[in-house]
Length: 211
Image (tube, rainbow, N blue to C red; front, side, top):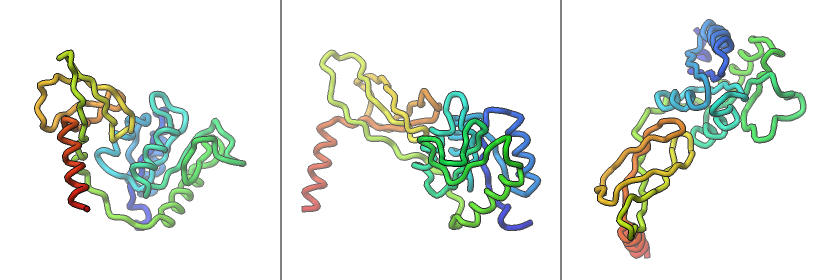
């Protein structure tokens, strides 16, 4: 088997027939293929393993390919991205907001053309070692206090889908690592509640050390 084909491909499409057909073609060629039904499913796959190429449809429910590509480009800038769709004319330019390395017009081009696009991108991409999965770093969340004595609401940003959400907690929570789940992609978000005064003291002490 050619070393070119010993690569992982993440194939994302909300149509089961397309996932099955393209997945079978790529597997027969020799690629290691995993599939996802939409953007959120793809992010869950990325949590487990980092592929060498992401191929995704653009129009999908819940999270579109446009948003998925933006997130992957920020989190994994080394991964080549291929957009596939039959709803756009790619002859002149990419649709607005689309950040990819190549496009595959579904229903217009044959599977062999997608195979060539994948092979060319793999050859053009600098080789990299498989990135190990690791525990996400915890977020440091400042608290200003609440005179009413009730529950406080903080805002967390999910490191998986990069969306921000509100989360309530009780004032008597200990200053230790806590865990919430993103309401959008269900990814765990680890955080630590830090009183604002303590955080400001740390910043002041760090500045004094530098000076």
